[in-house]
Each structure stands twice: as structure tokens, then as C-alpha cells.
Image 1 (cartoon, rainbow, N blue to C red):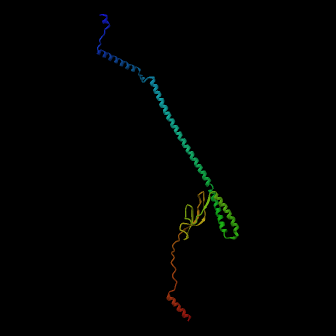
Image 2: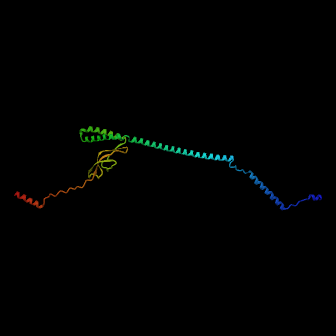
Image 3: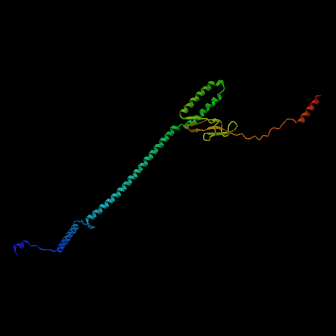
Length: 246
């Protein structure tokens, strides 16, 4: 072989051989990748490994802590509700105490007032008896001044009289003592007031003692007979009188 032939040496390789070689290289690379993935993937610890036991213990502790937390929250909720109920009861007690205090302030003198009202009634009776007697004018004026001072003092403390005469009978305000037949007013009205009624801060403390009107009953009496003499009897009587005179 000449030097010229040596420099121009070339080997011819078939295309099928090249394809087979490329496929072999690709398979090799794929196998290496699978082995690499399998090696790098972490493997799960065995069921009886220390790591698995530790995980189970942590789970148990978490569940225990959760249960304790729920129990504690229930206790806190119950305590909160009890505190709210206690606060509401205290507020209601304060309101009741305040209301009772106001009731005592407004109506605490009711019992004492009932003992004083007859005194005012007697002053009214004294003025009524002294009316129309000139000798009692000085006495009457003194009693009238005393009565006015007494009534003004009662009025300052919320005590007021009310009139019932001529008004319809009201069992809530009036106490009927008797009924009177009359045509002066409609039935079931107050014909006369025997004792005045009084209120304390708009609360009735004594009703009026009254006489109640009622309609008169229809009269069953027969009309009186006619006593006018008959004409014949009158004429006969006149003749008799004339005869006697003659």
C-alpha cells in the first residue's frame, strides 16, 4: 500500500449498525435514570421502627392535648355563662330594690294617712255644725284655718280628695251605703256624698261613702173617686133647702 493510499483510508459502516448503537445507548441512559430515581426516593420506615413509634406517640399526645383543650374551653364557657347569669340576677335585684325604695317613698305614709283622715272629717263636721250661727263665727274661722293648713300639708305629700256627687257610680272609687229613689238625676249616680274619698299619688287609699240614686217605683195607688154630686141630687137638695127656708 502506497503512502497515498494510507492517507486516503476510510471505513464504510452501515446505517443499521449505527441505529442499533443509538438504541443501545438510549436504553442504557434510561436504565441509569430509573436506578438513580429508585436510589434517591426515601423509603418508608418499617412499621416497628423507632421513627414510626415516635410518630404514633406524637399523634397520641396531639389528640390528648386537643381533648384537654376542648374540655378546658367547655369549662371556660360554663364559667362565662354562670358569670353572665349572676350579673343579670344582680342587675334585677338592684332594679327591684330601687323600685321598692321608690314605693316606700311614695306610699310609705299610707297607714299613717288613714289614721289622719278621720281627723279631717271631724273638722268638716265641725264647720258644718257651726254654719249659720253668728255666735260661732270666730270658732268657725279658726277651725276653717286649721282645716286648710291640714289639707295643704296633705296635698304637699301627694294626698288629694276627689268629689263624687252627681257622677256615675264607680265601684272602684265609691262605696254605696244606701239607695235613694229620686227624679233629680239618672239612676246609678251618686246622689249624696257621706264621706269624701282620697288618693295618695294617684293610688286610691279611701273610697267615697255615697248614696246612689235609683228610679222611683211606679205608683199602684188608685185615683181618688169623683165627689162631685149628681145634677139630680143637687137639684133635690136645693128644693129641700128652699122648702125649709119657706
